[in-house]
Image (cartoon, rainbow, N blue to C red):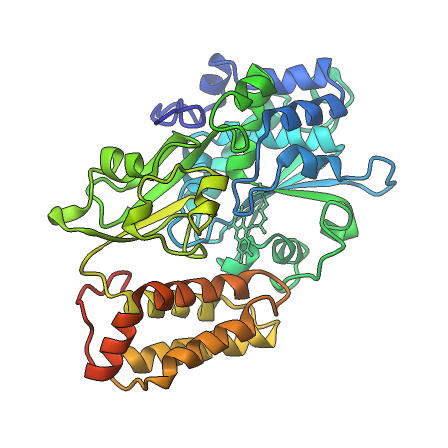
Length: 428
Ligand SMILES: Cc1cc2nc3c(=O)[nH]c(=O)nc-3n(C[C@H](O)[C@H](O)[C@H](O)COP(=O)(O)O)c2cc1C
């Protein structure tokens, strides 16, 4: 069901102002951790909450924080990932725009927990307004003494910096993000070492998504057990789902994890437009496998969606109706991954272009029957053979559309025309 904890104040136009935020109990959690809790206790509370990363992989946040070596003499860094480039995803932007202090407070608590005195927020280059809102909020937090030297007389120092990127999808991948933050080209690093041990400037670094960190002050305020009581046993809390595509009411909806997909699409989304039949659903951003309508009652939690054959990913739910040309969908997404491949790994650099070229010739009526197997062969030669998961992600829409809609590929190749006509996501 819909449950607004992150979005509790999202409609209040005054919320980005620090005085409004404070009047509703804002920064009390940060004060509490500084004055009453040791860093290990903060990590324990977040572990107890069961909070898992909202950036894609769903890794437990408290566990990630505990990997930062306490005895390392090097500085530690906290990095908030506000790159938000996954097609279909537009929730971090809204948090940064409409409740920036929730993000700042979460970052401050996380920084304290891992022993960092510097926290960065890396924001996608096109996000002018979110970046300005974050800059303003951080400035206000400095003015009130929640950031800077000797915060609230506790001896804890924290500097917070906004860094805008160049608008590259790859810079959302945590190691490319760290390279970009260091002023290098946004290309990925081989892991291990993982950032928690060797991240920014080769120092221990935690990278967490905006939504992940936005939960932290609420967990400290209400307790880890409270958070764990929301959602399912292994997928605790809420998630913001970004509903788009062929639905009447697209938008961002915060749901308790475990809520059926049908509730999002039908009850909140107002069903498929024009009374058309549902054909396909991408449940977690374009890098997640497509689900067919028979999976509409799947609960939206990490485990159930995995069991249904896909992933919760970044929370971008894309709905497609019966007239959607699925080969065109594959081509459009192939263009995205080709364009966004950083070029570092040959299989991804060359393979994504090759896939796009084949899909283009099929959709322009010049395909050959062998092309379908050639596409699958290319997918095999990219998947698992690149440094970062962009390559793995790029093959997902191709395999998924061939597995589920092979007849549409064959029709295109035989007749030179699409079986159905809606050029959904047609920007190339
Ligand atoms: C190609 C690619 C793009 C990514 N883009 C983002 C992004 O825009 N925002 C994000 O939070 N995580 C993104 N991730 C995941 C990050 O690498 C990382 O796992 C995440 O920021 C960790 O935060 P979390 O544990 O709070 O989810 C991306 C991963 C890949 C492979």
